[in-house]
Length: 137
Image (cartoon, rainbow, N blue to C red; front, side):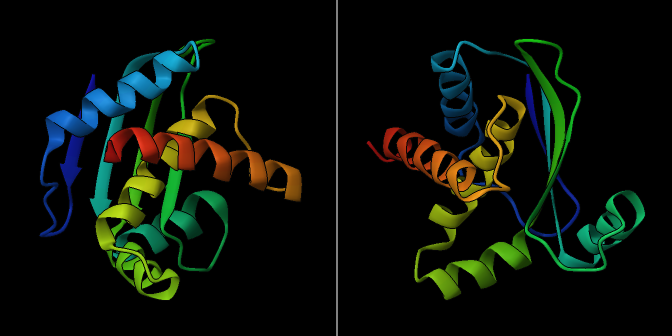
């Protein structure tokens, strides 16, 4: 089950199609979706979590807490829609494209993708791009 929760005025346009998309990406990677909670919030909300839980005093677009068990994906994904909007402008992409990239980024972490080294970042970006192609087709 995928749940979408809102701590600000933002509302997703089509929750059901995004839920199906995320589930399909997981299945392709031979994972199953258990419970994923997306929490959309503002910068202040996410900054507080970043400081409290990760000891990072910086703004970020996403924080994911992974509770997966083997191939069963579970977790909470917090996304700052303010940060997504700013990043979309910086990267010259639409808000929706950047939002979808961030949404699948969290799920890919649950499936073992990392983004610390150059090689890991490349693999993560390739997986994000492949997932976005499926959504946009």
